[in-house]
Image 1 (cartoon, one colour):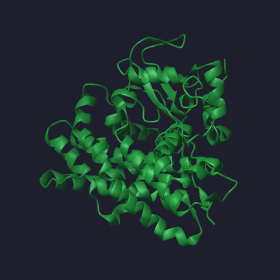
Image 2: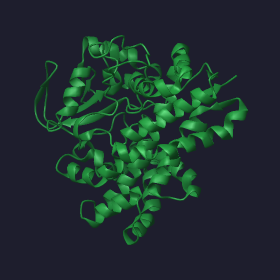
Image 3: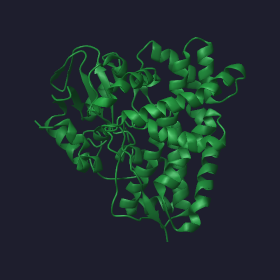
Length: 406
């Protein structure tokens, strides 16, 4: 068995490239018990898929039901902030089990159907074009700062019906909210600032939507309050969820996918040759190869057998999406980046009742960015030998991505 201190998942080398460690775990200890943090780490594709689909046995209500200390540890002086963080996260849609989850999801489902999201493609395409227009003459940019980060905020701000002038404020709040599941010991402080800032910002907007509904996402949540499905705190929390979840995951898809292309110039050349033909499958391969979300967590709702191990009710579990997506039992040549891969049953958006609501929108944003870059900047190359990732156990997040073009 692999002797794994969970701190190893935050080691700089593993943050930079977790895939060798995941391969060892899949081969030697695919359902791994970490004693110091009292946590199961699950890495094989079949196990992850089985767990995702058996939601009755694996509760999503982790934050509300788990009173154990956070991992890695936080500064002792900040532990008083933990109650507020748990109250905020515990009211998120993704932290609910049935029947509450089904009722909440039903309220917002129609807003996020594939057909509804497809109607946003022209807006996304125009936003990508505008961002590239601003930088194309420069010859080099930080693709993270200048493209991947501002795009989802523009889209989400428009979906929430907030003024364009508030985009920078929303982006600053999103940056603070993203300290969720980071590893820094001081992380509760910026996270708490982001929580308070988001609630203060959204509260008066929700009051207006209740009085005068429109067709934006805040009006959808406000209607859920009027119908008694959400209380006010849940409305505010789930507005924040759209902001930080949609921001981080789309940003990561764009950066990680673009990096994969730049490290595999043969695949970039294939996309450049015919972007319209290849971009949909290419985006799926970006999602599989280096996914925006590395892992997610659950709590065992009852005793259950998995991979020859006995998980006890109440045990913490973290399944590694990024590892499952590289499992040779599910993917031929799993470490190869192949934009023509079919089928591609990756688990980057989950499955079952918790399948990602924003999956269609994330796909559209990724497709439009990769298509536009291939059409407008075919000579794109990496402009650095040094890349850094945020120290997160959940997200696969580059801090910057300098690129240039000829």
